[in-house]
Length: 100
Image 1 (tube, rainbow, N blue to C red):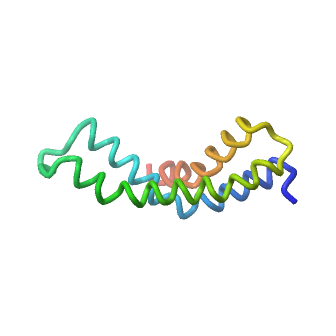
Image 2 (image 1 turned 90 degrees about the vertical axis):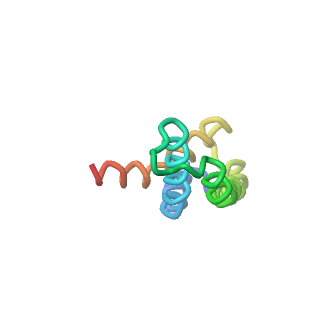
Image 3 (image 1 turned 45 degrees about the vertical axis):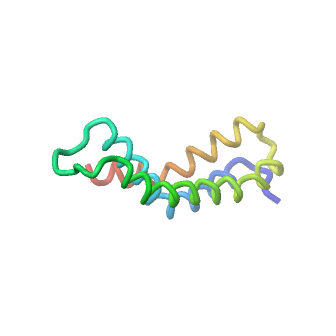
């Protein structure tokens, strides 16, 4: 069914639209870890406890959706997963660039 690289890219761009929220959460955790704001004195544990399960669930669903497609393409495994990761991040990068 899916033999071409652009079909896999399009599928992952569509998966990347709802993935904007978990990717933003990962960015927030990384930004809070490096330079916490003075008014955020609850620590990073609260942020990870709230955002962690959602990010992990979205990552698992992304992996589970791409695993069958990875075997059907003509790309190697490393090429497919890199293309999938870049395709999933494309809507988030476009949103970040649009807000600047």
